[in-house]
Length: 419
Image 1: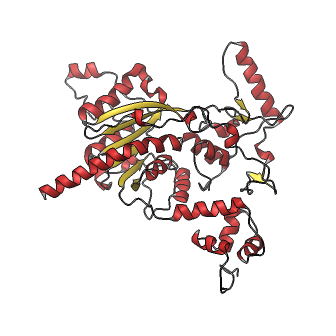
Image 2: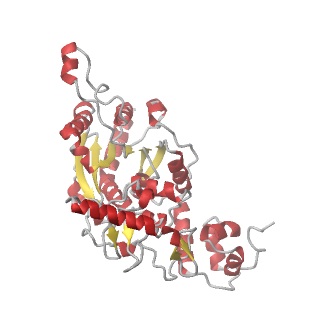
Image 3: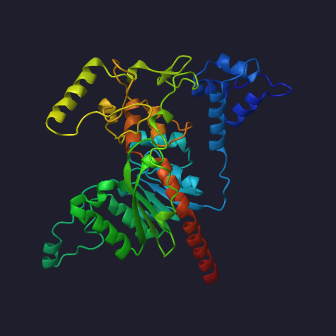
Protein backbone atom coordinates (compact mmCIF):
# COMPACT_ATOMS: atom_id res chain seq x y z
CA UNK A 1 0.00 0.00 0.00
CA UNK A 2 1.38 3.41 -0.96
CA UNK A 3 1.96 5.72 1.97
CA UNK A 4 0.36 9.14 1.95
CA UNK A 5 3.64 10.91 2.77
CA UNK A 6 7.13 9.64 3.61
CA UNK A 7 7.94 9.01 7.27
CA UNK A 8 7.97 12.24 9.25
CA UNK A 9 11.35 13.95 9.41
CA UNK A 10 12.67 16.61 11.75
CA UNK A 11 12.15 19.28 9.10
CA UNK A 12 9.85 19.20 6.06
CA UNK A 13 11.07 20.46 2.73
CA UNK A 14 9.40 23.52 1.19
CA UNK A 15 7.87 21.29 -1.46
CA UNK A 16 6.33 18.94 1.10
CA UNK A 17 4.83 21.90 2.99
CA UNK A 18 3.34 23.22 -0.26
CA UNK A 19 2.00 19.77 -1.17
CA UNK A 20 0.28 19.45 2.22
CA UNK A 21 -1.22 22.94 1.94
CA UNK A 22 -2.60 21.98 -1.47
CA UNK A 23 -4.29 18.99 0.16
CA UNK A 24 -2.61 16.36 -2.01
CA UNK A 25 -1.20 13.00 -0.99
CA UNK A 26 1.75 11.79 -3.05
CA UNK A 27 -0.44 9.54 -5.25
CA UNK A 28 -2.95 12.36 -5.76
CA UNK A 29 -0.15 14.78 -6.66
CA UNK A 30 1.27 12.26 -9.12
CA UNK A 31 -2.12 11.96 -10.83
CA UNK A 32 -2.84 15.71 -10.88
CA UNK A 33 0.64 16.80 -11.97
CA UNK A 34 1.11 13.85 -14.38
CA UNK A 35 4.42 12.76 -12.89
CA UNK A 36 5.36 9.40 -11.37
CA UNK A 37 5.09 8.88 -7.60
CA UNK A 38 8.84 8.30 -7.47
CA UNK A 39 9.33 11.75 -9.01
CA UNK A 40 7.09 13.31 -6.37
CA UNK A 41 8.94 11.49 -3.55
CA UNK A 42 12.30 12.81 -4.80
CA UNK A 43 10.91 16.36 -4.69
CA UNK A 44 9.44 15.79 -1.23
CA UNK A 45 12.80 14.56 0.07
CA UNK A 46 14.61 17.47 -1.55
CA UNK A 47 16.70 15.23 -3.82
CA UNK A 48 15.53 17.04 -6.95
CA UNK A 49 14.08 20.47 -7.65
CA UNK A 50 10.61 20.52 -9.29
CA UNK A 51 9.91 22.70 -12.31
CA UNK A 52 8.51 26.19 -11.76
CA UNK A 53 5.29 25.13 -13.49
CA UNK A 54 4.71 22.44 -10.87
CA UNK A 55 5.18 24.93 -8.04
CA UNK A 56 2.78 27.35 -9.73
CA UNK A 57 0.06 24.71 -10.10
CA UNK A 58 0.32 23.81 -6.42
CA UNK A 59 0.27 27.47 -5.37
CA UNK A 60 -2.89 27.99 -7.44
CA UNK A 61 -4.51 25.03 -5.67
CA UNK A 62 -3.56 26.49 -2.27
CA UNK A 63 -5.13 29.82 -3.27
CA UNK A 64 -8.28 28.07 -4.46
CA UNK A 65 -8.67 26.26 -1.14
CA UNK A 66 -8.05 29.38 0.93
CA UNK A 67 -11.12 31.05 2.47
CA UNK A 68 -12.17 34.35 0.86
CA UNK A 69 -10.17 37.25 2.23
CA UNK A 70 -13.14 39.58 1.92
CA UNK A 71 -15.67 38.82 4.66
CA UNK A 72 -17.88 41.81 3.87
CA UNK A 73 -19.33 40.39 0.70
CA UNK A 74 -22.75 39.48 -0.64
CA UNK A 75 -24.68 36.36 -1.59
CA UNK A 76 -25.81 35.27 -5.04
CA UNK A 77 -27.49 32.40 -6.86
CA UNK A 78 -26.11 30.87 -10.06
CA UNK A 79 -28.83 29.86 -12.55
CA UNK A 80 -28.17 28.06 -15.86
CA UNK A 81 -24.73 27.81 -14.33
CA UNK A 82 -22.89 25.79 -16.98
CA UNK A 83 -19.34 25.28 -15.70
CA UNK A 84 -19.39 28.30 -13.39
CA UNK A 85 -18.01 31.20 -15.42
CA UNK A 86 -20.40 33.74 -13.91
CA UNK A 87 -19.78 32.27 -10.47
CA UNK A 88 -16.03 32.84 -10.83
CA UNK A 89 -16.74 36.43 -11.82
CA UNK A 90 -19.01 37.10 -8.83
CA UNK A 91 -16.72 35.35 -6.35
CA UNK A 92 -13.89 37.55 -7.55
CA UNK A 93 -15.99 40.55 -6.46
CA UNK A 94 -16.58 39.12 -2.99
CA UNK A 95 -19.77 37.17 -3.67
CA UNK A 96 -20.73 33.89 -2.00
CA UNK A 97 -22.83 31.42 -3.96
CA UNK A 98 -25.78 29.97 -1.99
CA UNK A 99 -27.64 28.08 -4.74
CA UNK A 100 -26.78 26.57 -8.12
CA UNK A 101 -28.96 25.22 -10.91
CA UNK A 102 -27.68 23.40 -13.99
CA UNK A 103 -29.46 20.58 -15.81
CA UNK A 104 -26.60 19.06 -17.88
CA UNK A 105 -24.92 16.19 -16.01
CA UNK A 106 -21.53 16.73 -17.67
CA UNK A 107 -21.52 20.45 -16.88
CA UNK A 108 -22.43 19.52 -13.29
CA UNK A 109 -19.39 17.25 -13.21
CA UNK A 110 -17.04 20.07 -14.24
CA UNK A 111 -18.77 22.55 -11.92
CA UNK A 112 -18.40 20.28 -8.89
CA UNK A 113 -14.75 19.57 -9.72
CA UNK A 114 -14.05 23.30 -9.48
CA UNK A 115 -16.58 24.38 -6.84
CA UNK A 116 -16.78 21.52 -4.32
CA UNK A 117 -19.87 22.77 -2.46
CA UNK A 118 -21.39 20.87 0.43
CA UNK A 119 -24.77 21.00 -1.29
CA UNK A 120 -26.17 19.42 -4.44
CA UNK A 121 -26.65 21.22 -7.73
CA UNK A 122 -30.33 21.66 -8.54
CA UNK A 123 -31.27 20.25 -11.94
CA UNK A 124 -33.99 21.65 -14.17
CA UNK A 125 -34.87 25.09 -12.76
CA UNK A 126 -38.44 24.69 -14.03
CA UNK A 127 -38.95 22.03 -11.39
CA UNK A 128 -37.57 24.12 -8.51
CA UNK A 129 -40.04 25.97 -6.28
CA UNK A 130 -38.88 29.56 -5.81
CA UNK A 131 -39.60 29.21 -2.07
CA UNK A 132 -36.96 26.45 -1.88
CA UNK A 133 -34.22 28.83 -3.09
CA UNK A 134 -32.29 30.60 -0.30
CA UNK A 135 -32.53 34.36 0.14
CA UNK A 136 -29.84 36.12 -1.87
CA UNK A 137 -28.56 39.58 -2.78
CA UNK A 138 -27.91 38.98 -6.48
CA UNK A 139 -29.43 36.69 -9.11
CA UNK A 140 -26.95 35.63 -11.79
CA UNK A 141 -28.04 33.82 -14.96
CA UNK A 142 -26.86 33.14 -18.49
CA UNK A 143 -30.34 32.11 -19.58
CA UNK A 144 -30.86 30.40 -22.95
CA UNK A 145 -32.55 32.55 -25.59
CA UNK A 146 -35.61 30.57 -26.57
CA UNK A 147 -38.22 32.12 -28.88
CA UNK A 148 -40.80 34.05 -26.91
CA UNK A 149 -44.46 33.40 -27.64
CA UNK A 150 -45.57 37.00 -28.00
CA UNK A 151 -47.68 36.67 -31.12
CA UNK A 152 -51.41 36.89 -30.84
CA UNK A 153 -51.57 39.41 -27.98
CA UNK A 154 -54.11 41.55 -29.83
CA UNK A 155 -56.26 38.48 -30.39
CA UNK A 156 -56.12 37.68 -26.67
CA UNK A 157 -57.11 41.26 -25.95
CA UNK A 158 -60.12 40.88 -28.20
CA UNK A 159 -61.07 37.66 -26.45
CA UNK A 160 -60.53 39.17 -23.02
CA UNK A 161 -57.71 36.77 -22.16
CA UNK A 162 -54.74 37.68 -19.97
CA UNK A 163 -51.41 38.40 -21.56
CA UNK A 164 -49.55 39.81 -18.57
CA UNK A 165 -46.52 38.64 -16.58
CA UNK A 166 -46.97 34.90 -17.11
CA UNK A 167 -48.51 34.76 -20.52
CA UNK A 168 -45.82 36.31 -22.72
CA UNK A 169 -42.97 34.30 -21.24
CA UNK A 170 -44.48 30.95 -20.25
CA UNK A 171 -42.67 28.12 -21.98
CA UNK A 172 -39.35 30.02 -21.96
CA UNK A 173 -36.57 29.70 -19.41
CA UNK A 174 -36.58 33.47 -18.96
CA UNK A 175 -39.91 32.98 -17.16
CA UNK A 176 -38.03 31.14 -14.38
CA UNK A 177 -35.68 34.10 -13.95
CA UNK A 178 -38.72 36.34 -13.60
CA UNK A 179 -40.58 34.19 -11.07
CA UNK A 180 -37.50 33.92 -8.85
CA UNK A 181 -36.88 37.67 -9.05
CA UNK A 182 -40.51 38.27 -8.15
CA UNK A 183 -40.40 35.82 -5.22
CA UNK A 184 -37.13 37.03 -3.65
CA UNK A 185 -36.69 40.64 -4.82
CA UNK A 186 -32.86 40.53 -4.65
CA UNK A 187 -30.93 43.81 -4.65
CA UNK A 188 -29.57 43.19 -8.14
CA UNK A 189 -29.26 40.81 -11.06
CA UNK A 190 -26.69 40.07 -13.74
CA UNK A 191 -27.94 38.41 -16.93
CA UNK A 192 -26.03 37.37 -20.05
CA UNK A 193 -27.08 36.42 -23.55
CA UNK A 194 -26.05 36.51 -27.19
CA UNK A 195 -25.74 39.91 -28.85
CA UNK A 196 -28.60 39.10 -31.23
CA UNK A 197 -31.09 38.99 -28.37
CA UNK A 198 -31.66 42.69 -29.06
CA UNK A 199 -32.72 42.05 -32.66
CA UNK A 200 -34.53 38.73 -32.20
CA UNK A 201 -38.05 38.80 -33.68
CA UNK A 202 -37.41 42.37 -34.92
CA UNK A 203 -36.67 43.57 -31.40
CA UNK A 204 -39.94 42.39 -29.87
CA UNK A 205 -38.31 39.68 -27.72
CA UNK A 206 -36.03 42.21 -26.05
CA UNK A 207 -38.92 44.61 -25.56
CA UNK A 208 -40.78 41.90 -23.63
CA UNK A 209 -37.71 41.25 -21.46
CA UNK A 210 -37.22 44.96 -20.80
CA UNK A 211 -40.87 45.54 -19.95
CA UNK A 212 -41.01 42.59 -17.57
CA UNK A 213 -37.89 43.62 -15.68
CA UNK A 214 -38.56 47.36 -15.56
CA UNK A 215 -42.32 47.97 -15.67
CA UNK A 216 -43.63 44.86 -13.99
CA UNK A 217 -40.83 44.08 -11.51
CA UNK A 218 -39.56 47.62 -11.01
CA UNK A 219 -35.84 47.04 -11.58
CA UNK A 220 -33.59 49.72 -13.07
CA UNK A 221 -32.11 48.00 -16.12
CA UNK A 222 -28.93 48.88 -17.99
CA UNK A 223 -27.49 46.89 -20.92
CA UNK A 224 -24.21 46.84 -22.80
CA UNK A 225 -22.75 44.70 -25.60
CA UNK A 226 -19.14 43.86 -24.76
CA UNK A 227 -16.58 42.12 -26.98
CA UNK A 228 -14.42 39.65 -25.07
CA UNK A 229 -11.52 40.58 -27.40
CA UNK A 230 -10.73 43.38 -24.95
CA UNK A 231 -9.73 40.69 -22.44
CA UNK A 232 -8.97 37.45 -24.34
CA UNK A 233 -7.86 36.78 -27.94
CA UNK A 234 -11.36 35.96 -29.15
CA UNK A 235 -14.04 38.04 -30.90
CA UNK A 236 -17.08 37.23 -28.75
CA UNK A 237 -19.83 39.82 -28.37
CA UNK A 238 -22.39 39.29 -25.62
CA UNK A 239 -25.15 41.44 -24.19
CA UNK A 240 -24.77 42.14 -20.47
CA UNK A 241 -27.90 43.08 -18.54
CA UNK A 242 -27.54 44.58 -15.07
CA UNK A 243 -30.48 45.57 -12.93
CA UNK A 244 -30.85 47.12 -9.48
CA UNK A 245 -33.92 47.14 -7.27
CA UNK A 246 -33.42 50.83 -6.50
CA UNK A 247 -31.75 53.80 -8.16
CA UNK A 248 -27.97 53.61 -7.80
CA UNK A 249 -25.26 55.42 -9.78
CA UNK A 250 -24.18 52.27 -11.62
CA UNK A 251 -22.79 52.89 -15.11
CA UNK A 252 -21.10 50.71 -17.70
CA UNK A 253 -18.84 53.73 -18.33
CA UNK A 254 -16.97 52.70 -15.17
CA UNK A 255 -15.63 49.56 -16.85
CA UNK A 256 -11.86 49.58 -17.29
CA UNK A 257 -11.82 48.34 -20.88
CA UNK A 258 -8.36 47.22 -22.07
CA UNK A 259 -7.31 47.84 -25.65
CA UNK A 260 -9.00 45.34 -27.94
CA UNK A 261 -6.45 42.82 -29.13
CA UNK A 262 -3.80 43.44 -26.48
CA UNK A 263 -3.84 39.67 -26.00
CA UNK A 264 -3.24 37.38 -28.97
CA UNK A 265 -3.45 33.65 -29.57
CA UNK A 266 0.18 33.12 -28.61
CA UNK A 267 -0.82 34.01 -25.05
CA UNK A 268 -3.12 31.00 -24.77
CA UNK A 269 -1.42 28.38 -26.95
CA UNK A 270 0.77 25.63 -25.54
CA UNK A 271 4.40 26.84 -25.90
CA UNK A 272 5.61 23.28 -26.66
CA UNK A 273 9.08 24.11 -25.36
CA UNK A 274 9.14 22.54 -21.91
CA UNK A 275 7.83 25.59 -20.02
CA UNK A 276 4.66 23.64 -19.22
CA UNK A 277 4.33 20.26 -17.61
CA UNK A 278 2.49 17.70 -19.75
CA UNK A 279 -1.26 17.56 -19.06
CA UNK A 280 -3.41 14.49 -19.60
CA UNK A 281 -3.46 13.57 -23.29
CA UNK A 282 -3.37 17.21 -24.43
CA UNK A 283 0.40 17.58 -24.38
CA UNK A 284 3.07 14.88 -24.31
CA UNK A 285 6.75 14.37 -23.58
CA UNK A 286 9.36 16.45 -21.85
CA UNK A 287 8.55 19.53 -23.94
CA UNK A 288 4.77 19.12 -23.52
CA UNK A 289 4.15 19.03 -27.29
CA UNK A 290 0.52 19.06 -28.41
CA UNK A 291 -0.69 15.55 -29.18
CA UNK A 292 -1.06 14.59 -32.84
CA UNK A 293 -4.69 13.67 -32.13
CA UNK A 294 -5.56 17.38 -32.43
CA UNK A 295 -4.10 17.69 -35.95
CA UNK A 296 -6.74 17.50 -38.70
CA UNK A 297 -6.68 14.43 -40.92
CA UNK A 298 -5.92 14.88 -44.62
CA UNK A 299 -9.54 14.03 -45.43
CA UNK A 300 -11.07 16.59 -43.03
CA UNK A 301 -8.61 19.34 -43.98
CA UNK A 302 -9.32 18.80 -47.69
CA UNK A 303 -13.07 18.84 -47.04
CA UNK A 304 -12.86 22.16 -45.15
CA UNK A 305 -10.75 23.75 -47.90
CA UNK A 306 -13.16 22.58 -50.61
CA UNK A 307 -16.15 23.78 -48.60
CA UNK A 308 -14.60 27.22 -48.14
CA UNK A 309 -13.68 27.47 -51.82
CA UNK A 310 -17.25 26.58 -52.85
CA UNK A 311 -18.72 29.34 -50.70
CA UNK A 312 -16.11 31.90 -51.81
CA UNK A 313 -17.14 31.22 -55.39
CA UNK A 314 -20.72 32.06 -54.44
CA UNK A 315 -19.65 35.27 -52.75
CA UNK A 316 -20.27 33.96 -49.24
CA UNK A 317 -17.95 34.32 -46.29
CA UNK A 318 -18.40 30.82 -44.94
CA UNK A 319 -15.33 28.73 -44.26
CA UNK A 320 -12.75 27.82 -41.68
CA UNK A 321 -10.91 30.29 -39.46
CA UNK A 322 -7.13 29.77 -39.63
CA UNK A 323 -5.12 31.63 -36.98
CA UNK A 324 -1.52 31.97 -35.89
CA UNK A 325 0.13 33.28 -32.75
CA UNK A 326 -0.57 36.95 -33.58
CA UNK A 327 -4.26 36.47 -34.35
CA UNK A 328 -7.54 37.10 -32.57
CA UNK A 329 -9.81 34.09 -33.03
CA UNK A 330 -13.41 33.87 -34.08
CA UNK A 331 -16.05 33.01 -31.48
CA UNK A 332 -15.58 29.59 -29.92
CA UNK A 333 -18.90 27.75 -30.22
CA UNK A 334 -20.41 24.63 -28.66
CA UNK A 335 -20.10 22.85 -32.04
CA UNK A 336 -16.29 23.10 -31.95
CA UNK A 337 -16.06 19.37 -31.19
CA UNK A 338 -17.40 18.55 -34.68
CA UNK A 339 -14.50 19.76 -36.83
CA UNK A 340 -12.89 22.73 -35.05
CA UNK A 341 -13.35 24.79 -38.21
CA UNK A 342 -13.98 28.18 -36.59
CA UNK A 343 -10.57 28.20 -34.87
CA UNK A 344 -7.79 26.20 -36.53
CA UNK A 345 -4.19 26.68 -35.45
CA UNK A 346 -1.69 26.99 -38.28
CA UNK A 347 1.27 24.59 -37.99
CA UNK A 348 3.20 26.12 -40.85
CA UNK A 349 3.30 25.83 -44.62
CA UNK A 350 2.52 22.36 -45.93
CA UNK A 351 1.25 21.05 -42.60
CA UNK A 352 -2.33 20.36 -41.64
CA UNK A 353 -3.64 22.72 -38.94
CA UNK A 354 -4.85 21.53 -35.57
CA UNK A 355 -7.71 22.13 -33.19
CA UNK A 356 -7.29 23.85 -29.87
CA UNK A 357 -6.85 21.51 -26.92
CA UNK A 358 -9.45 21.76 -24.13
CA UNK A 359 -6.85 23.52 -21.96
CA UNK A 360 -6.34 26.15 -24.65
CA UNK A 361 -10.13 26.56 -24.86
CA UNK A 362 -10.18 27.15 -21.11
CA UNK A 363 -7.54 29.86 -21.47
CA UNK A 364 -9.39 31.39 -24.43
CA UNK A 365 -12.45 31.80 -22.17
CA UNK A 366 -10.38 33.33 -19.37
CA UNK A 367 -10.21 30.38 -16.98
CA UNK A 368 -7.03 30.01 -14.91
CA UNK A 369 -4.54 27.17 -15.09
CA UNK A 370 -6.09 25.71 -11.93
CA UNK A 371 -9.44 25.12 -13.63
CA UNK A 372 -10.09 21.39 -13.71
CA UNK A 373 -11.37 19.62 -16.82
CA UNK A 374 -12.68 16.21 -15.70
CA UNK A 375 -14.72 15.41 -18.83
CA UNK A 376 -14.03 14.11 -22.34
CA UNK A 377 -12.74 16.41 -25.06
CA UNK A 378 -16.16 16.45 -26.73
CA UNK A 379 -17.91 17.57 -23.55
CA UNK A 380 -15.14 20.06 -22.74
CA UNK A 381 -15.48 21.71 -26.17
CA UNK A 382 -19.26 22.01 -25.69
CA UNK A 383 -18.83 23.45 -22.19
CA UNK A 384 -16.25 26.09 -23.06
CA UNK A 385 -18.17 27.00 -26.23
CA UNK A 386 -21.26 27.63 -24.10
CA UNK A 387 -19.39 29.48 -21.36
CA UNK A 388 -19.00 33.19 -20.72
CA UNK A 389 -15.62 34.86 -21.08
CA UNK A 390 -14.81 35.12 -17.38
CA UNK A 391 -12.74 38.36 -17.37
CA UNK A 392 -15.57 40.33 -19.02
CA UNK A 393 -18.01 39.46 -16.26
CA UNK A 394 -15.39 39.77 -13.54
CA UNK A 395 -15.05 43.41 -14.54
CA UNK A 396 -18.84 43.89 -14.62
CA UNK A 397 -19.08 42.28 -11.16
CA UNK A 398 -16.33 44.60 -9.91
CA UNK A 399 -18.25 47.75 -10.83
CA UNK A 400 -21.51 46.25 -9.52
CA UNK A 401 -20.02 45.44 -6.11
CA UNK A 402 -20.16 48.85 -4.35
CA UNK A 403 -23.80 49.34 -5.38
CA UNK A 404 -24.76 45.84 -4.23
CA UNK A 405 -23.12 46.44 -0.85
CA UNK A 406 -24.79 49.84 -0.49
CA UNK A 407 -28.22 48.35 -1.16
CA UNK A 408 -27.73 45.39 1.18
CA UNK A 409 -26.40 47.65 3.94
CA UNK A 410 -29.37 49.99 3.54
CA UNK A 411 -31.77 47.07 3.67
CA UNK A 412 -30.13 45.71 6.84
CA UNK A 413 -30.28 49.12 8.53
CA UNK A 414 -33.96 49.54 7.57
CA UNK A 415 -34.83 46.12 8.94
CA UNK A 416 -32.90 46.94 12.11
CA UNK A 417 -34.91 50.12 12.64
CA UNK A 418 -38.19 48.31 11.99
CA UNK A 419 -37.20 45.51 14.32
